Image (cartoon, rainbow, N blue to C red; front, top):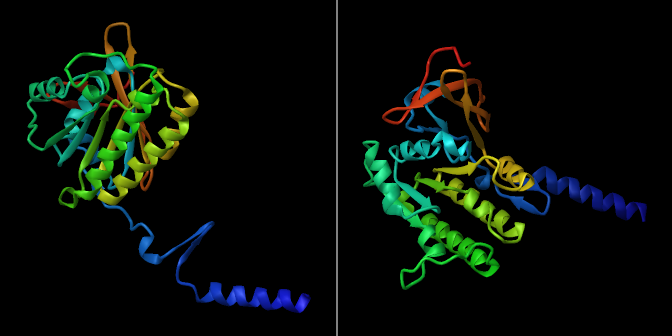
Length: 271
């Protein structure tokens, strides 16, 4: 028996020594499947890109945790100006989002809207319907989003595109099994990596289950934390980026204001 065990062990060691693949539990990944080092892609916010050395790592999934009063969606609007963009709209009709983007002086010719709002809230006859809490409809809308992501991935001409979720909180608040949200997140992540693009998930602070949100944050490559502070004489908007896989995070709190887009304050006073 000991001789048999030694023979098996020797055989295993020889196979491991000869193997050029990356071994993982449950699967063997060939060397070509190992993700290459990422280049960077610009966010479109000049001062931020300069501080980041050109932008964020390409292929990143970014979670924007924002105070609803901070107008975090303006970040999304500015991100659309960098490359072809798929803009997922959940809270209102796309024409109103397009109107707001235009009002900032931005071009919308490279934006394709994915209209989750109408699919969820409007019937084929054009009537508004209340589907909140309807588990069947909620599961259907997750499947619809996954279907759209898979279609995006097959459109190779748009490799490197942005995918923006305004908001991702819509999906986190659906009455579905948590496994559905994990599946959606996995598809988002894989699609982003395959496209070598950028995906931005806008999450409203203090609006959904903290455990689930922590899972999403853990899965994401980058986290933007956007907050609004009330001082004695002014309201201050601040941005921090505590997590960036592939490069050092920005540890400073960055003041910003909204004026012809996101304007980062280069002063050191962040009080």
